[in-house]
Length: 486
Image 1: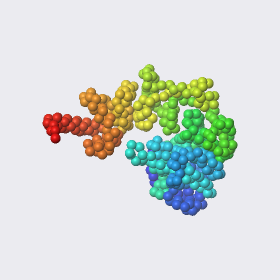
Image 2: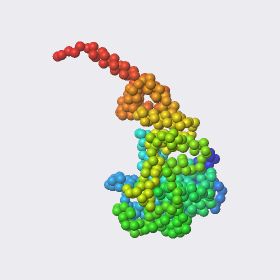
Image 3: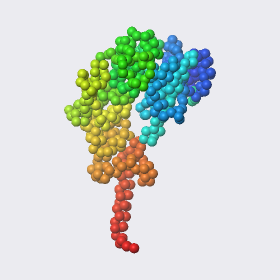
Image 4: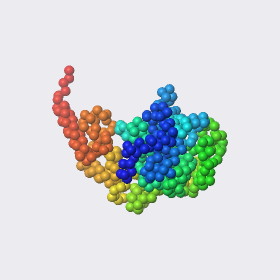
């Protein structure tokens, strides 16, 4: 793995990629205004890197070069209208949300980007985008805008680009895995029709392996479960032309048809130029997925191949109540659909989905190494009961694995048995105080989950106990002072 990363981080590799891009564009890169401030990413860069790394020039297919140009928000336009528009102008001037452009992509840490416009200049696709570095818990976002762009790509083979400002290659772990295995995978199922077409095209271009049925199951389930505000549920002329060229392939997995009356939202114009799609594969999952990021994590945890020990650990956390035979926490949600998979209030068809709001269940979805430790069902159950009993679940978030959380929960519970209710009330109130107050008393260290250690907890509790003793002493002294009536 380090060999691949060394290759990608090499200045020599960067120079070779730039030389190849200049060759394929006939030197046209220098004619793009402000090119050194932009980001070149996607198939062109990735295909060149695959070709260099594997030493096969036949794999270097460069049909176009995508250049991402960061734009600024329009101060005269409402922010929501810019991030969540009802219309999008594509290269043909059609006002539609279509063809893998126009949607907002939100990465796991909350940063988001949205393509606002794209236009073609010869071999170049000029792609304008908005970017917002989300801030969580007052901690600055640690993902660059270039990395957020790459995380929004649909295939692992495309997740690399060249940062022209800093003259280096940007890449994701998924792309490193692709260079190592040459196995094609879908990483973002936001556009099932477009990705189906691209998947089969990339298989030919890159001469790589792919578990096609598994990837199509992924896209099928996404099409059934992801709501329209996270996935474009229709396609326009650009995608439809590509579909006609691969109709025999796409028709195995999806049907495309003209929308019926009132099927599309009222605000969408040019409905006559749109097609809607529906999955064909007889495959579904039983878990409630919610957001697209949650869905991707559920799929990774439960529907991708891994060793038996790891899968057993995942199952014990995800389905804890099934193992314990107690469904007081987890529930089976019953959604009602019609025969087309659309939600109804009637009762033609019912599909129950496994749903859980348990603490350990939620941690499994957000912490990638959470299950990679030695634990049993009793450890899982203790943490869930702790999080339900005490308003202190944030004190466990700095722990990366379940067993670390268990040890911290046991420690806090043991302190409670010594100190009593006041300690729980005190710890639970810290996040509600002003930063100045917490800094004055030395409590601010506990605002960062990474600083919540056993030593720091004991230290802060001692400080608070000393403060309470002083306060009580002052109150006692004041009570002894005779009241003087002026």
